[in-house]
Length: 90
Image (cartoon, rainbow, N blue to C red; front, top):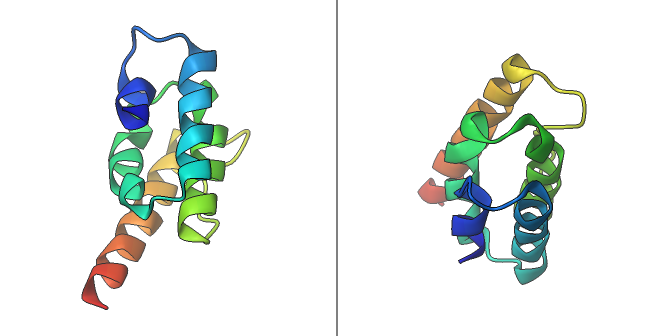
């Protein structure tokens, strides 16, 4: 449900940020894939929280970070996708 709230534009930004924080607290690494795939479509204001959530879930810090532009977000997405592929091989 929290992943759906994060993606759904009908929810206000604070609710979507709270959903990302909840995902981090739940510590379910299965949320990484959906968050990573949705990164470029997220509002810019969610990128830092998404980066913190991914860091909490994956124990890696590929971003995105506060102040990042779309180029950095796409680079972060690529790093996370590679990380997911490597984790899937293990």
